[in-house]
Length: 267
Image (cartoon, rainbow, N blue to C red; front, side, top):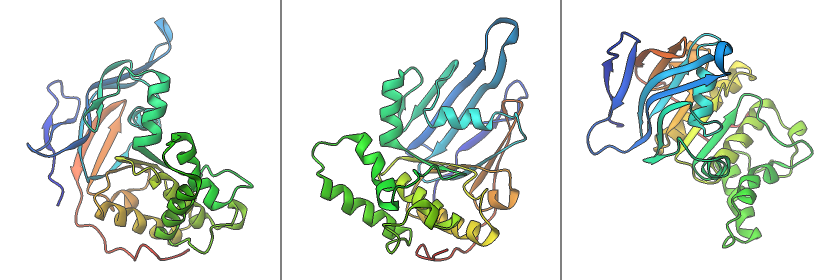
């Protein structure tokens, strides 16, 4: 069972912060005063303000909030797609707050797996080739082409698509496309998986099966942070963080996790 972070109220009444985790527990995400401001001078917009957050290794966390609350900005910062204006962000113990674009690109490729609402698969490219892609960016000279192919095959097998290796996105259902995206997110064995509305484009049955996959990954010890507008989807997680006006409004533990279908279930 993943140890729970110790929560405390903000000193300025800005909601809840999650600054500490139990001693001896590895933290994957730790932010202090994380701030993002867009624009300059009179047209400045503070999208995220002084966010203190700790997420331990192995947690499954949902992030919710209304439009404009700062969800996308927070995910962009946690995924090293952008740099904060102020504050610090340590990813698996390494301060990435002031890294340049090249350094952040390397961190994204090797340490963060992304799952998007719209899958973001390359058209006219097979499932196998889509999953291999992050390995090509990694450019591990010690890994030959045949090893990359076998690794990608294994990942697609894990998500129940070992019989769809040569199918292109237009030949796959929405649920199957999302499975390919999950396999791609796992290919470099990331320390953090970021899922942005992973069931948003799926029917309810396919959505449940994707959540079963995420539960299975969580059960293996993966750290997952998921943005969702759906409170039912959020209830699948261990913990729900709600943002409001760029700040953490609530940070609560959820009830017992639902029983999930086997990982190999197909859509």
